[in-house]
Length: 265
Image 1 (spheres, rainbow, N blue to C red):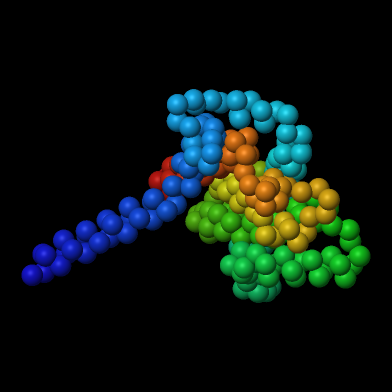
Image 2 (image 1 turned 180 degrees about the vertical axis):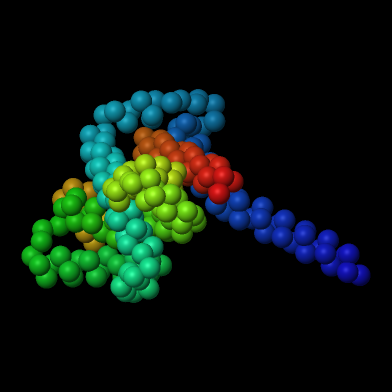
């Protein structure tokens, strides 16, 4: 009886897994299909595949500008969050750090809250200071959102470092800066790289928070959201496929680096 229940449970878990995979990846395959096969009379024509929609992206100036804005915002948010993660991580790891729990709560809170709450709070903050919304305000909002990722990776690595490394460095006469440069920073390269990659992907795909903080310079997700009102064309589907494919590749690379790094610890 027990074995039959176990087999039934395994079968149900397998069905749930297949269902989740289908729901998750089916839209991607549909978008890929619509970017290759033209739609005639509401139905895709599988007899004439073409990659002209991918070549036509070079003529979409508004989309290319939005893509550039997304890359600038994502790159800036990832770099700034990495720098802050190192500074905050080193402070939190101090034994006499004041307000350690409160600081960690402030860092993690925007990531676990709904983006609409974070976006509205930042919008009220910038409006109260009469700060015009632009790409800089978007970068600040994305840093607030993704800071928890890089901070978590950096603080975890710092907490796993042996105290003997600091003691040996001090015994050899190294200054605090030399210890950081030659001992701590090399140990943080892997988590920083992973944090930058994950932060970039999350920032690049963020839509709701960007809607509150962007002005006239829209990012790619916001531009695509506006395109949805009139329907997606084949070139838009091609761009979506490229963006999703790039995001998946970056996420897989980050996961591979994290796995190799965790095996070394």
